[in-house]
Image (tube, helix red, strand yellow):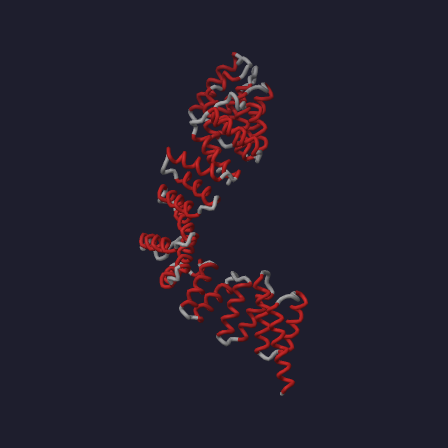
Length: 431
């Protein structure tokens, strides 16, 4: 579970905002007198959001130099999202003063923006000391290590930050990410609950708690946490889907059906419910509950071109429960025509065709299933052999069985079919 880049960059911004204010006093080099006025003008333009003017003023300067000029150029380029140019400016500031901490931190942040994690980590390590740095600086360093996949360093920095700043919930949240990464599910659950005590309607924390509970094989507790996440963020359809999916997974399809009725009632103004992922979940729940009336009604809300493979499989099962072989075959035929069929679907379609007396279609489906990868292909071969035998195409059937037994000599089902041929031959000799 990787931390989201947007959260990471928000923390980067918190670091930079504090460092920008101290930029001029950070360098050991004295500021040349002739640079003071251009810097004052450039800083006024920067504070007013005129970043092009900031760069123009500082780039036109040609007197005695100072690294702060390049630092402010880098900041202005950053505000314009011109990260390669910002990196070059920060590097030039460091070339003039290699101990210039503000430039080093800014360079690390710019590397993050370009997802150059190794460069960001290396630079952060030169300018951030976990024993003396501020909380946001150490957190930035730890997250750079995380993104660079140096998890040992990341864990060391995070735990040291926790020791120094035990009340900082940002660090505790990041530590929760690490606990999940390490598979320390009990600790992750406890950490989630401790954070939820402070912010009980934090949907993201409830999601993390659900993740930890699910991973520690507590699906009911995980589902309850997902419900809390949804209730904390009721306008988020993804959270509702996660909760309903968990309810279906623990064998509570009726809960999903009730919520499905509510959802569809809220969307009666539209001709169809426009979220295929949610509709699939509702249709799967109706299938699990054998509620064929709901299933049929809900499937009708999904345009045919948006009906997924799983939806059509649910429709086929529903049709068979209603003893409607024709509807089941139609659903499977749609899967096949849309190129969504695998060996199992062709095998199922072939079986239904055979039961309906359509031997030609059954043979075509069995042969197609036989040619595809997967365990169903072997079973399809045996079904095809039986079908050919029933169609009195004995030589084809025997040749196919012989080839099959060469590849799978221990298959008892195939040997049983061989006995049928032996019995056929014996009966023929008696006649």
